[in-house]
Every structure is written in structure tokens, then in C-alpha cells.
Length: 121
Image (cartoon, rainbow, N blue to C red; front, side, top):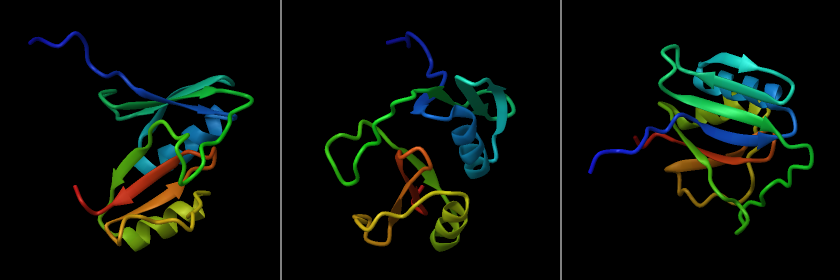
């Protein structure tokens, strides 16, 4: 079957899109492609991969662990401990509940979204 389309971006809600774009730009090394008060995009230099951030003033942060989260991002890293240290220095927090058994670590971004880092590709 031929595809109908290609994924253009994943977009996260945030009370401050620019700030969250800066956080994920530091995580990925991707550049800011667009930023306004209400929306921001970061992406690879060729634009093939993008993450968008849209303003939601009354964002209800998902709980962790909990059934109210809808999705999360996973990032592959070469050194798990070093990545966690760097990410927490950028503003991520490490919740107590960690189901990864040393295979991955769950972190919470500055807007409250859970995300994972892992050495498993």
C-alpha cells in the first residue's frame, strides 16, 4: 500500500513554547526553525525531522506514573548517567518511579511532559 503522507512533526503543548523549544534544542542539537509567542519549531538542518511546541496557557501536566499521559518521546544516548546529569542541569527532573531497570530513565521536561533516555537503540 502506498503511503498517504509522511510525518511532518510531533507537536507538544506548552505554557511557554519558546522555552520548551530551547530545552529540546539543547537535548537534540537541532536548530530553531521558527519561533513566535504562540508556536515554535526545532528541527534537523535539512528539515526532515521536527518537533513543534504550541502555547496552551492552562496546560494540565500529565502525572507520572499515571494513566493521563498520552505520548512521550524517547532519546537514544551513549552514556545514560551523563545524559541524565546534563538533562537535569537543563531543567528536566527525575521522578522517583523508574520502571526501566537501568535500561532507560524517565525524566520530566520543564513543561511537565515525561520523556525517556536510553542506551538501547
